Image (cartoon, rainbow, N blue to C red; front, top):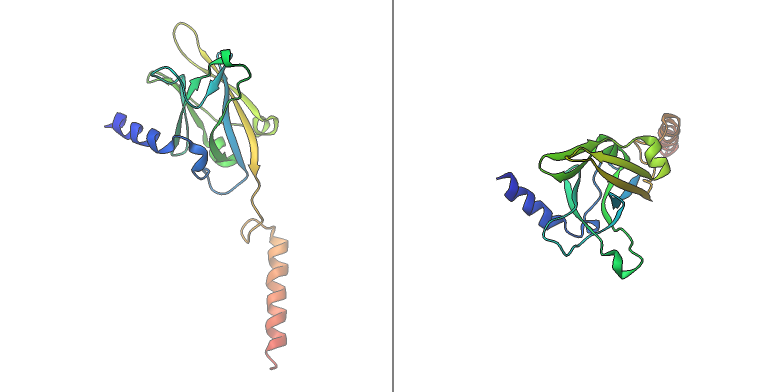
Length: 166
């Protein structure tokens, strides 16, 4: 059952940059897998199985190794997530028995990169992640400082008192 569910999710999220970002509305980062064991990655591959799978929140993407013989290869953005979702953890999975959840730190977001080691036999897999800031949210009622909220409420009260005489 889990395999069927995973296949359905993978089919829906192929080309996942079209899906909305995962998270609660904070700064949004585009996440790409720069390399796996030093080899560049691609969003599609010529082999039957992906090099690794990435999951942020309820979004899932598969990553293949790129054909570097074609020249300059750029690793694609596979998912987008806000800072809080990334801090909650990114699941990096090589196989069913080789997976790790990496909780992204503020330092890694500031630098725009993280290196994740997925345990494995005979050696661990090194996955290099990149984070690029895509969008910073506008200040809303809940995210504005209390001082700004109080001033806004005060202006509304003053306006109400001025209109009360009409």
